[in-house]
Image (cartoon, rainbow, N blue to C red; front, top):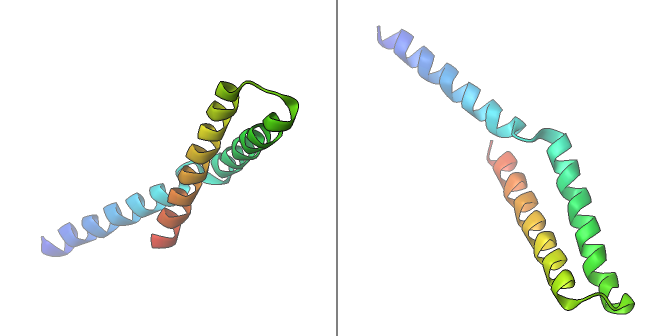
Length: 80
């Protein structure tokens, strides 16, 4: 009985670990990188082209959020 319980526990842990590694996957990472690049470029170029500061602040916030999500995903993958 203990061996089967331990076995199910190990299987459950393996399934959970593989889910955290695959959450979003490479497609999610690529999309986050593209959004980060586009919003950072908009924020940077906006000063030269005369974009409204609210629009630039929004794109900068999106860039920071994407960067934080990418960092969290990287750290989570390194832990597994």
